[in-house]
Length: 165
Length: 282
Image (tube, rainbow over all chains, first blue to last red; front, side, top):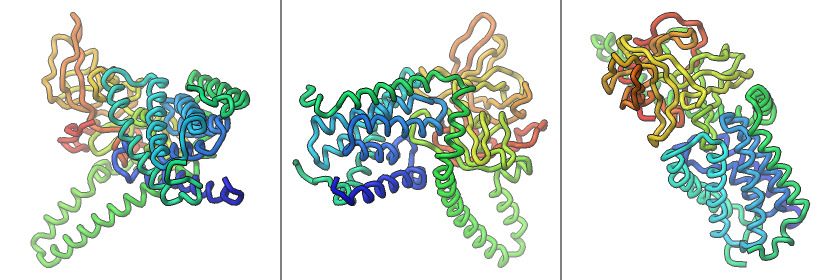
């Protein structure tokens, strides 16, 4: 991150948080609508250390848990692990590439939902299967699409390269 | 696999991960008596502006829908003015548009459902009405189709609703003709869809599939006559009783607007709800 980019970066994060609480409920079925809060977390993890990302994931997850008390703690666990793995994997394996970032958003969403439903213990049988292999992938696709659109629009603010590094 | 892993995850990073995972596990193991105040304080402080934003957003959508409806009513009224003989019929149609709120009369608070992204969102939902507007714990929460759940916790401006899908939900139900009673609880989801189980139905009685199930009013928490769902199958039977599967009337994941019944009601609410309310899919 260049000096002076920090403010712009946080503007994008704030925009995503605002979209989560204002626009998301207008985007159709809640099970597949893009999760802008998770997108903000994953965007943060792309350029942060794994420890920082784990802490950010914990905070985001705990805040989410306050709004869905049926799975209190499970969201914090899921976001912590996803935040850490995203930051670690991005640093170790991934090039700074638009489609790779889209794949990261998809995988992060799916993994977050998988950990959440498994850790909460509220789903079983076919319902768990549907959640893991239908609704979560669909939400992952919409979140990845929203993430790619965000990166295209704000690529200069987020300093993301469009091709292979 | 761990190419360069040591460079990218220091001991400090690993320490933070371990601490946050441990804190998450502690949070998961908290009892509701400890967990709820923490969640409540987060909703009243950090999340308060965001919940207000979400509530305003839902109200904006409601306003747009209401504006469209008002426009339609205005157009209808204009036509009716030109056809005086039909004003009475037009009034009747407009009254019908008022819907459930008018049928309930008073003693309710309308609220928007503030859905979240988590897959467990349908189990407990946050609504945009709290104790300041008269919402009390254990108050029934209904949609035009029937029962959504019960208020499990209230704050000043928001409330948490344990929906019928919540594992802790229980309700005393009866067949719409009052002939059969049983206890309703969430199904164990082995059927692949969100269903309720109606247990404790006496073996000598039989409930035909398609029968509407209403709250019985027993226990004093839920008023009598709120639609819960429709019997769709038999789950099993013992020598003494049968268990039925009930398709709920209200889908917690998609309901956007609800009413919280605030006044203690002793009357039968069956006639208040639309007769085909239990046809909705969960």
